[in-house]
Length: 336
Length: 145
Figure (cartoon, chains in turn yellow, green):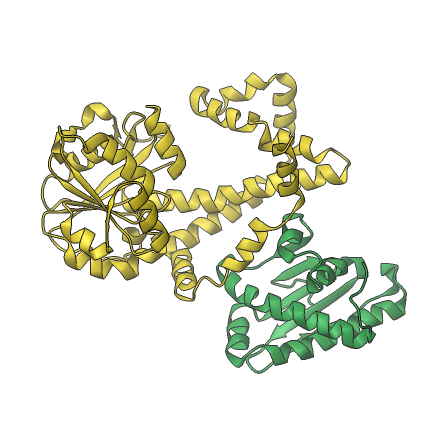
């Protein structure tokens, strides 16, 4: 019999003391998808007199800087913000971090904390944080908009936490305090290393996401070829919200138990059709993808894409920005 | 080689084959030596298949030139689409992105981490097809699908 899996530690608000951040200066390096919601959450939690943290933004992107100023933050160049920080949150895009790290790292003070929201640059050895600095991971499992919304309404959001280097012996208390102040620990956060985080993140994005996307596209186009109404197809697939409710139900009641709550016809149809899916082929493809992520081949390709000025971006923009039947159907529905 | 089994008149198949041949010549002039070398390193051969006209074009990429090779039974990298999909993209009636979303382009065997080299080829190839089409048909206007 297999031994039961050993689960990582789960942290909640009760494990954190935000007093560990009293009087600290926190620099948000990058004010984009994650930077804005985390900065707003931290200001809500830590900006009052009781804790008295100062929160500044480091940015060299004009649009992001403008947005941060409009939100009421002091904005400095990245390295200058790092120099003022007791805790610096590295929130630049993964592939951009390696070229920015030397200038930022050179200004970080010994005893300060450098926090990454993704394990990518650390796990692939693309950055070298300076000696004497704590290096920690706080990786939310949620998009920026949801991070903010779920914090405002008190639900919190899942994140991964890890300490990669504890120079100060204070890395864990500070990290837990920060995760709590950022709104995550109301939901809970799991302990994870940077390497585990990046493998999980990239693997599910690349092995599962494309199958889901391809299944939606194929179901839509095959149904349309057969004369089914496009709007009805999109409703069944995601537009009604039934599918997202199903995912929420999986999270709440369990993946398999949720199957039976849609009635026997759905369970019977799903089971019989699942048996005919070539899981071997699917598994082979997923194993290949994971191997390229583990080996660093994907990271090499992403860094090359960045160094070359994102040559694949126009194709991606064409695919997602085209005037296609799905987008037109969605627009029609929104105007109804 | 195209065959009448496609249901198209032989003359039309010959014309399509001629356009593809001319497209390769034009394409060679559009790619730099560096681009050809990158392509040759990433994907030495790309088999383009047009099942509606029963035509296969195996494009072999060498450092000096692209050339047409004999179609392979088990090609390592295949791009399959209808002729009309190629022509719609070449004449900007429908982008390859939209065709991809609609499932009108099937790609098999491509290493996705070498997507950049393939994408580098797409625009010059579509331009070359358009020019070859206009030359071969001697028609001043775009074809009607």
